[in-house]
Length: 277
Image 1: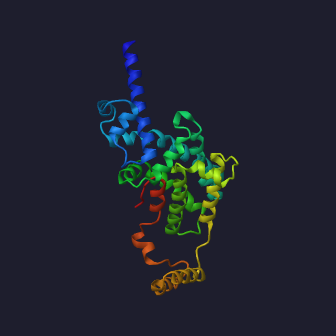
Image 2: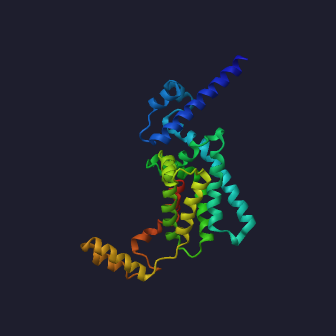
Image 3: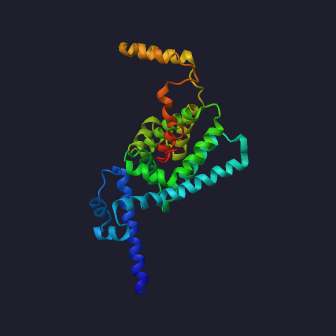
């Protein structure tokens, strides 16, 4: 009996530490949180953290894995289901659905974080710490590659570099909204008092993402138009901007292709901090 009680107490202590680390990570980000803050919030001593995790780094690994492992398993499972159902008819909306629907489902389960789950995702995808990016890259690169390849099959007109940039911008915008502590007040302001649940919010953001992802590549006239805008904004940059406008739609400026590193890398960094060789 005593052994079972001790084991249960140890499990409660470990969960309290993980919960405290998660709450501080959501509010502060990795660099701003300390072990002292975590132990104070969890009401444990430093020895308990060392016993269960060994270090702050190992604790954060465990905290992220606790939520993201299951999320990504569910994402891949749903993407595979759509693949079997649709094959070559897989759409951009289905790929986005495979990303978002599991997150929404888990956010409604209090056992895996509840409403805080979406904010955790937003923070994980936008946290500037190299430590967080490296961890996500090491653990979830294969998931990011799967989704990038699915997006490319659904959007075959986009070069890989262009798709990488568009996903980078789109996922970054979504993650910023999810991570924000003022999202609820902004929703109330924009919706003029009308209620908006998570599904409605994500659907609105996803509709913008679909439009951005499906947009045609800019042609020479569009490039010239933006070159003129840049020239009007800064006369010193007019000549260089106009030089860039001479490229055709398929010939983006060379820095967009430097080393071929953009490709899926930008998207993977936005989604999981992953990179592709």
